[in-house]
Amino acid sequence: MDKSILFYSTNLIAAPVPFDEALLKGLAPDKGLFMPEYIPRMEKEEILALTDMEYPEIAFRVASKFLHGVITDEELLAITEDAYDYEVPLEHVYDRNYVMRLDQGPTASFKDFAARMMARLMQYYLKQNNRKLLILTATSGDTGSAIANAFYGLDNIDVAVLFPETEVTDRQRKQMTTLGKNVRIIAIDGKFDDCQALVKQAFSDAELDYLGLSSANSINVGRIIPQIVYYFYAYAKLRKTAGEEIVFSVPSGNFGDMMGGVLAMKMGLPVKRFIIATNENDEFPKFLETGNYDKIVPSKNCISSAMNVGHPSNLARLVALYGGMMDESGKIFTPADMEAMRSEIWSTSISDSKTRETIQEAWKEHELLLEPHGSVGWAGLVEYCKESQDDCGRDQLCVALETAHPAKFPQEIEKLLGFDPALPPSLEGLEDKMESFDHLDNNYEDFKLYLVENYK
Ligand SMILES: *Cc1c(COP(=O)(O)O)cnc(C)c1O
Image (tube, rainbow, N blue to C red; front, side, top):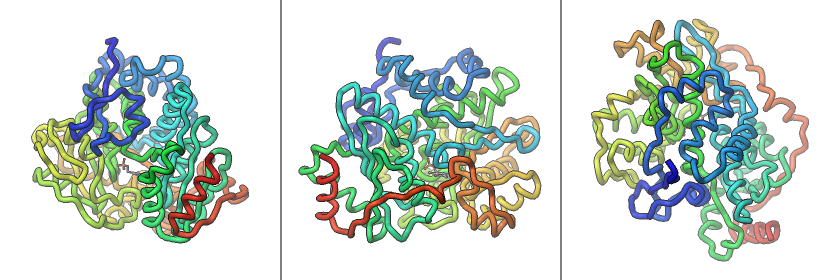
């Protein structure tokens, strides 16, 4: 295995590229998403060997399967150790049902797993080539803080985040504006769409090419690979016998998280079934059932707000894994093998009222504290167990993912459960920290001048 894995575009026009190029480009030139040309295997013995390892070591073992030949083992291990300096709790709920809490990172959302590793890999390749990047991103709340925190304090990379002045909560704003160093935060007198339009215009402005603008957005393949790891981790820690199968339930929006899981399965993780639970944006469960894909425009607003996606970009990757071809608009050119997909994936849509009911039931019956996203995942698992022949809740090992910390949704939890969840250490003390950010009108020329003056 000396040749390193190349990454092809799901639109099949652009030529395959090595990992570092896919990472720094983000999107392929033909607007497709990068995917590995083949899926490396984790052999049975390699999976068994993970049992006694810590998270950073497991991350190293899994990622090195894809990055073999493009980074040294020593450097990759240093990156995973630096990125994963927090806990990954597997909470026992009842019998063999567990919740994996992916909410202990600096911004208390599972996006930290992907963003922190992607940021460090980017830093590694930029330093090697003596290059610099300016990450430019617009946020309606959570993405901005995950990106800002992930790149905070790294070399060769600056970060500028635009947010709509009146549309983010105080806590969301403070998670970005209290950082400093290489992170600049800009309040725009406008809406989220205005912020996004400013960013887009900057990307297409040739006069700003010298800044080395990059988006670090959620479709980067550098974010998918880290999201494979925690599936192996959960299995390694919870399996009882060597070949035991596991059921995962994944609350899904843009389908990056689910993609990590499906890749883990294709690498050899013994997964019995993947449950993809969506909120009321139910384009995927319908697609799985019928094979016809209709995106939802505009997407529906649900309380699991990070999953309000009516056209998941990573769906093109899933279709590719099952032998089909879907372009960025959602048009299918080659149908996927839907039979195979149905045998491995089960999907359901969870309404807002069901999401709330589940938060209450989980707390009452199991003292399991969930926020809206994790509740969708748990509700999906409960539904699957009712419908399937599996011995769920008894001998069948099942893990639902909790993707955010309940303290990020204090109003909802207070209303449903009557108390205010305690803040995780990462969000404590924000109130007292000094904020620093700039203000700009919603005007491209002003924004451009700002970039030119601040980044030479
Ligand atoms: C982004 C996000 C999701 C959805 O993840 P996808 O990879 O987009 O499917 C779920 N929960 C939370 C809290 C998120 O921030």
